Image (tube, rainbow, N blue to C red; front, side, top):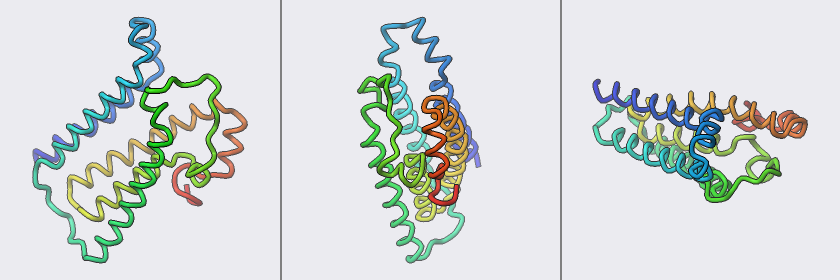
Length: 191
């Protein structure tokens, strides 16, 4: 039980830190207080998040977690397919957005609204791929630890999407509203 409580706490801290460090006010503070550091903020943010996620996942899988149910071979095959689809979508999106999201490429002032590729089907394909991947992982390994992880990630993604929606509406205005009226946020044809 202790491991599960620590895991819940670690997921909460990870999500909280990930959000706080992305706040515009904190970015402005860093820009004013450390102008030479600021151009590297996004890269440092991503390195910090990656290392923290690695530590969190190491802890999550460092102890034996009880399984909530037994998966049949058919369920494992379906889970493998879901994992592959989610992982492929994630990898494509990371490849597509990596230079800008990582901080290795400067964000241009004249941004373009991307509505091609997986964005034709959902407005947030990286979140979609991530959720599909972790749900597949849970089907494959239906442990308490993985249930804690998918719960934390799902809540975090649902909150994050609302934040992203406000930001994209502000940034792209009517173009984004028109796009939003045609393409669902997260799950094609559903939500």
